[in-house]
Length: 354
Ligand code: SAH
Image 1 (tube, rainbow, N blue to C red):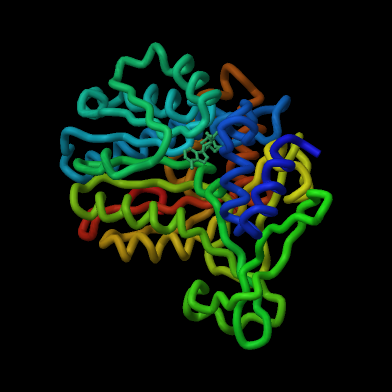
Image 2: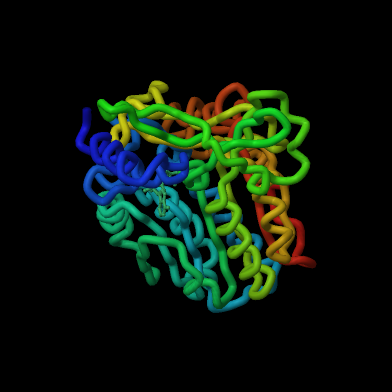
């Protein structure tokens, strides 16, 4: 048993079962043994690969998206450009390079990287050391950067936010919790207390045993971002794997060395994530007073932004770009499961890609 598993079991013995959200928070972010706190999880030697790590084209397209939306809104200044969960800093490096087509935009920017992991923050600092824009880091998202025009990028960030799970039992709902037996072995258990008030309205068609997942952290954050955009302009672009219309299945998963693992088996050693409920994020955007566009598949989104033309250019020097393009846009690969959701102010023009 790992040190972290033992500590979680002791916590449960002392305080009772944890919600899945509490378990995820400890497993991912415990300062000593948490998954993100202790490693660089990306690439072929790591646990998973993300779009910016597949090709520079991904970050470039997102950078140009920001420039276009900024133009359409009459070039407001100053601007905060916030990235949530920047990983290795690759997306931001590629986006800032592409933004050189608009020096005025770069000059208006204050870049803020929101990163919980000290290991990844160091990697980002090294990667972005030569950028000639103002850069700042913060370890958690908060309202302090929301006082002016906001551009916000988040790729594979929302799937890492903690979720809660509710199971249909009889006419109501019970929360699924994490408990520990006398030997400290972790398992799921249903809370004896009703959770009816915590399940969004309209989900009562669930069959017995059906599961509803919610991410209060994701919806609260989206609402806050959206009200800043409604007030000060700009745009947010959220890209992730997820679903448009929620069903009654569970999507919480653990991934280790590019394979699925047991969710409770190895806290701190495997990446935990859940599919993003884009309809919940779109509703949160509306509650914040802004307008959501999408979600649309990553494939159609990138193709509409001109990724194929960019790929042709790059292919002249590097034929492997064809395979990277296919991975990003083919519906059998990342083109359909991965989706993009944009948020702009009411009355702003339709953002490109939607
Ligand atoms: N966007 C990057 C990395 C995705 S992995 C890419 O596409 O390659 C998720 C990232 O979010 C990691 O950088 C992780 O450390 C960070 N992260 C996860 N939860 C976070 C939280 N609550 N606050 C800040 N950063 C978080």
